[in-house]
Amino acid sequence: LRQGNSVLILDDVWQQFCLEDVGIPILDGNNGCKLVLTTRLQDVARAMDCEVIMVNPLPANEASALFLEKVGSAVLSDGRIKVDIKSFLEQILQKCGGVPLAIVTVAKSMTGKLLPRHWKLALSEFSKFERIVDCLKFSYECLEPQCQECFLYCALYPEDAEIYKEELIEYWIEEGLIYKEGITREAMNWKGHDILDKLVDSCLLELKLWYGQKNGGNHWNGTIPMQKTSFYPFVNLSSGRAHRKSNWNSAL
Image 1 (tube, one colour):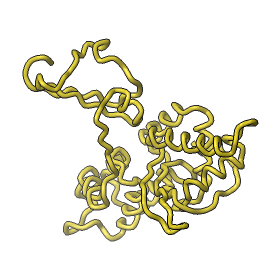
Image 2: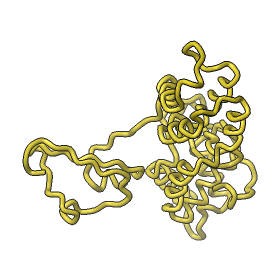
Image 3: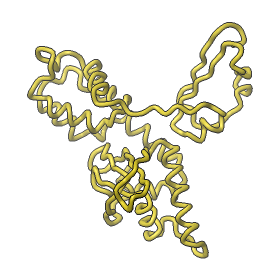
Image 4: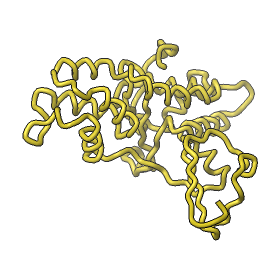
C-alpha cells in the first residue's frame, strides 16, 4: 500500500478499529493510497475520521432499470414490461424502497417467473426474502434494548403514515419507553432525540429535513423499513397518530 496508487475497500464495518492492528499502514493521502469503508453506522464512520458520504435510495427510474437488468428480458414484451405482471412488479419495486440489495435479491428470485400468480405470490410473501431480513435484523439486534423498543413502536403506525418527530418522542414518553423517575420532562425529550439519532446512525431510520406546514416550523420527514404485515411498510416521519401497542415480538 505504500507504493503506487491503490484503493482499499473494507465492506460492512460495524465497529471502530486501529488500521495498524489489522496490518494497514497509516494512509496520509500523499502516497496515492485511499481507504474506503462501507458501514451502516454513522458513528463508526465518524470515529474512523472518514468523510461521510450518504448513499441515498435509487430514484424510481434507476430502481426499475436495475430490477429489469437482474430479472432478465423474459418479463418484457416489445421492450416493455408485460401487461399482466406490470402492476405486481411496480408494487414490488415500491416495497424495495430504492434499496439495491432488496431490488437485486427480489429480481434474481423472480428470474424465469412469467405467470401473474408467481408475481402475486412474491408480493404477498415479500417479508420472506431472507437476505434483506437478515441485514435489518442484525442492525436491530445491535441496538440497546430501549432503542429497540422505541423502534418497534414506530412499526405500530400504519403504512405510509406521517409522524412528527416531536410527536413521536412525546408518545415514547407517555408510553413509558423513555420515562425515568426523577428526571425532568425536558431531559426525557432530549433522550428521545438521542434515541432518534441512534436509529438514524444505524440506518434503520432515515430522516430528511423539510420546512413543514405545522406551526411554520422545521420538521423531519423520513422512512422506516420495518416488518409488519409486509416487509417494507415505509413510514413517513412528519405527522400522524400512533396505534396501541400490540404484537411487538412479531414485529421483527
